[in-house]
Image (tube, rainbow, N blue to C red):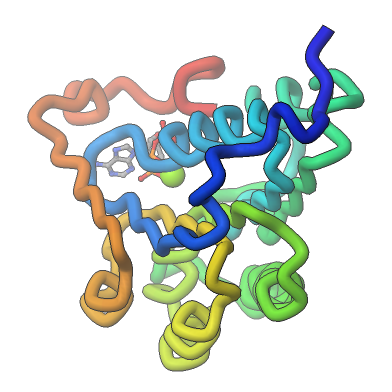
Length: 192
Ligand code: ATP
Ligand code: MG
């Protein structure tokens, strides 16, 4: 039986090494990479916060999984949805989308400032910045002043060059091929 005790703490140097990671690009795998990282960190008893910007509703396979983890693991996980149950683009964005994102961002800022987690995943934060719903300068300020030991991941297309500049790890996923281009839309279990 897995237990979160001192023997399960991460390697002794971890506290000195909290980095800012960015998963961007037009290829598939940004959000799922961050969720995989969350699973890995939870397995080391890290406290993890996932904020899903621009995503609302229950129709995400990952929510079903994360909500049904063992109590030992799930006690360290918080998931917050900061969006409506629809896909937001620059040409359909509304004040309601903005409000949802703002709520998530306020919560993220507080969690970062108060050093409440070991890993914070800001899923689709790049999109929220790109849409103008999270202020870029404020995000830069918050990231630059994050607690030393905290790891923060930003996902989403169109990562801002200034975010890329201050990040320590940036992965750009390139769509060498994508079935989307053949007219295959999002599939349950694969894309959501
Ligand atoms: P995953 O969640 O599988 O890791 P991702 O986070 O890399 O993927 P996003 O960029 O967040 O992917 O895209 C979200 C959704 O946009 C995908 O699930 C897909 O249905 C849709 N999509 C994929 N390619 C395109 C495209 N070229 N144009 C518009 N929408 C796309
Ligand atoms: Mg994504």
